[in-house]
Amino acid sequence: MNIICALIFQSNFLITIWSFVVTYVVCLINKTPTPLLKNKSSFDILHDHSPNLNHLKIFECIVFVTTFCSSCDKLSSRTQK
Image (cartoon, rainbow, N blue to C red):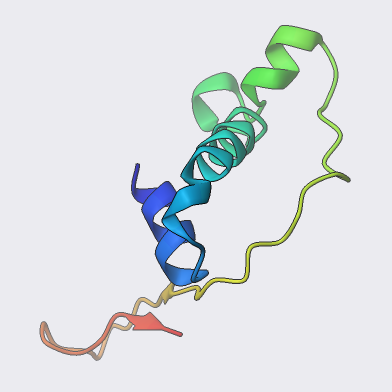
């Protein structure tokens, strides 16, 4: 649900298209490799081949990357936009 909310709010989409966003996120999760499946996706396990990702569209949303800083204190920012 966090991924869905992030895509809707950061991309300035209307709340009326939430069903499309939910479907899109489920598709992404099913096609994303996971360490639990030995770096294979659930799609890969079910269909015995890698998923085709050419049809995916880009959501324009803000991305925050976690940065690990050994010299930072507890109150300093740990992400970069």
